[in-house]
Image (cartoon, rainbow, N blue to C red; front, side, top):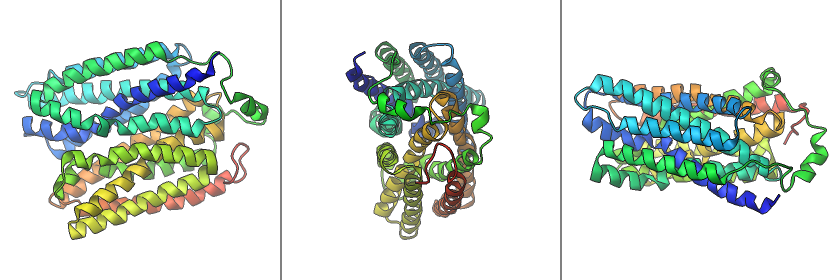
Length: 409
């Protein structure tokens, strides 16, 4: 087997996650939809993002189980088909039927879109990491960089399409484009048939690794502490990411400038993957916490002084912290609980996004409405969530100290 091809597979996987990451561009779609459906409230539109995140996690779990039956190519095609149906049906919403259209938006953007992204995400992440047993953190970071960059890299194009063709025609174009990308990914990407490059070193110590089944993993204290830590940090990030474009507009910037959070969401995944390979979970997690705390302080300062610069830099740090969490989840679950059951264990760990997707956006929406549209209280809440994450980081260090797979580093 030519292991040099693993970089080709990684490249194609990253391109596919770039398009899958468009699910995070909801803040770009929210304003155009609000202009068409004027009776939709902020909370109702935020629910679309929440549903998509819930279905992303469920789609990942389904994708993990499908991996036991089907190969990676079919799972990627299933992902593409779900996204084609979901996004195309969003393009058929009726402006004269606001209530019915909201329900359809929940179903086709939230359920089909989020579920399709989850299936595709699980398929490419769990397949490509098998090619990089020597660089799990880096490979995860690169792929997840694409996922995080989706909103920014394609955001300006989407914005121009919306301005020129309208929100409905744009979704039709996106449906076809994403489907084509996923078909190409299904053709190119393949799973390794034998130990990949770098596997010999990993295999030498593999006998010492306890490969936890999902049931075994969920009985450990350190899994649940890590899970709750991820919920806290993801909730903090989603409070801002859900409204990044609108926050930028509120302080004198542009909607696309607000999506800078996506750029550094991607960068944070590379930084975190590299940190994990070099320094381990303990150091990598504390860096993530510090990034989010710095973000909160800068956003509070920006809100008080109405400084666009402070707001933008704060969004940068939100992106770095939020982007690092899924990469750390992928690398940590693989290392701490073994790779044998990784597809299922990884998808279960990603369920931390469900409570986060409910807690973060909903608290954000309620605080925003109570404050008359001002974001200051959101920024204070972000700091509170980050302080909770610091406490959980300490608890994770304690519960991980005597584990069989994870060193205390």
